[in-house]
Image 1 (cartoon, rainbow, N blue to C red):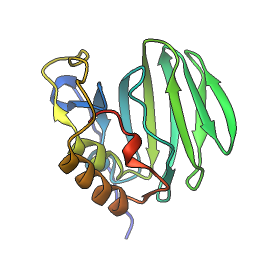
Image 2 (cartoon, helix red, strand yellow):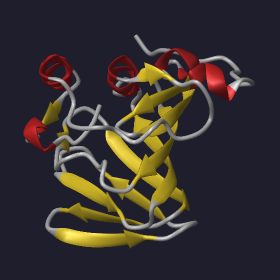
Image 3 (cartoon, one colour):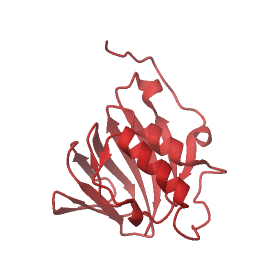
Image 4 (cartoon, rainbow, N blue to C red):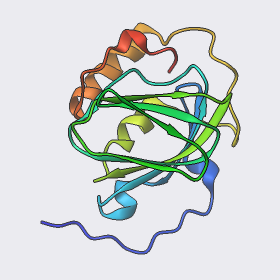
Length: 167
């Protein structure tokens, strides 16, 4: 059965903003908002807090860079993104990225929706629309264990969680 969506508007960004991986992510549209068709996240990233290489098996992932500079590695090729540039990664492509500038702001588009629930669950409510204090060290073992379980559930493969620098 195909899910349907209704008109949806987000008015209060802070209600949907969470601290994740040393940055703050605003969940602009989630599965419940779009009938599962897509999700959209505004991710404010901090240099040095990027994810290890990984593969999505359930969704395509696209990136629209708004501020800063990112370098993606996908299928053993590098893609340098500057503000205004876009990159689409189909499911099944192992990838990672590095934040080249001190910080970066990027829209992350996931099709179909679903994976945003993993990010939401692994994150903490934000106190404001700004970066949290810099992390003091790697995530606790129990957070990494929970991340591994959620990654399996959400179809994330080929990831070495020992490389995660913060929660």
